[in-house]
Amino acid sequence: MATHAEQNRVADLERSAADPLEASARAWSAVMALSLCVATLIGSEFLPISLLTPIATDLHLTQGAAGQAISVSGLFAVLTSLAIATATRGLDRRLVILGLTIAMLVSGLLVAFAPNYPVFLIGRALIGVAIGGFWSMSTAIVMRLVPAEGVPRALALLNGGNALATTIAAPLGSFLGQYIGWRGAFFMVVPLAALTFVWQWLTLPPMPSQRRLRAAGPFGLLGQRMIMWGMASVALLFMGQFALFTYLRPFLEQAVGLGVTQLSLVLLMMGGAGLLGTWTIGRLISRNLAGTLIAAPLCMAGIAIVLILLRAWPLATAVLLFLWGSIGTALPVAWWTWMSRVLPRDAEAGGGLMVAVIQFAITLGAGGGGLLYDRGGHPAAFGAAAMLLIASGLVAMLGVRPSLKAIGRAHVA
Image: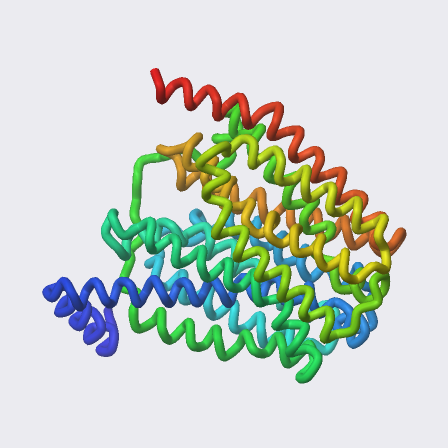
């Protein structure tokens, strides 16, 4: 039986439904709450990148062990993205999202007050659960909140939260860590998560689980040759990207010799470059999507190789990392565009597969990069990143470009 408070809330929703303007405002407020949730989740995921050194020092770890904070969250995001639909079958999607937001809040508390490495990893595992669960359901929830013509705009708002968090997480973490410590930086997640929870509680309507006929599952799509090639290229791309990106702070401090303030500026510059790249990549995609998917990882591989050769040259390193940020942050836009073209009728299943592949690749890239960094320093980790990125471009050349050409010919016919 519904509680009195819940009955009042349902009555309020019914009254707002009678007023289209009020209903629309409530729906878009819910979308904004979800966008804040995205920004907080992604910020939490990447916060360790700029705080590896103080984390390792405080918890008595190697740089590579501290870097597992990224790989652990990625692993649990993969497991959750593949299992959450079945595990939450029959549950109201509003309650599921609220539960994931609570997991994010608890994660922030555990990490901020972690007395040792195991508790720290448990906190990172929880943020992975929240990330995997949220991204697996986000598109379907948006489609239930707003009318069909508003879905692209709503999804753009969610991706805006993602881009914003990707831009500011590393430099903000470095800046805050300098003044309030790495624990204080992680604790900032807690009030944001609490605000997100309250906002979602007030604006998300009841969304009963929908039962549909059996559709194609994520792994079933791998039977299609073009999807297999595409997912292989995506996996290699993100493995290479995070084998390098995760260990930028120790590289910039130890090899390049930057201080904390200079480090924060470089990371902020990379974030700004990422926003710039996201705004401009649309033109490249519209002109030549396949060429973008091939050339971009090859350019990133070249940057990784030059970073190894340059060593302690701060200005040139900053320029190369600006280029890295502009390409690496924007490239996922191209891959989501590819997904919409090759799977126009199975975009939801394809999106779930993409989330799992990306998170698994981040896990492998950050974990493998950490092992290499501990054994051979940044040349070993960055060299492996370059090889993976070259492989991504080659796979896109061999398998993705032919599939896009075939789809183009089919549309013309």
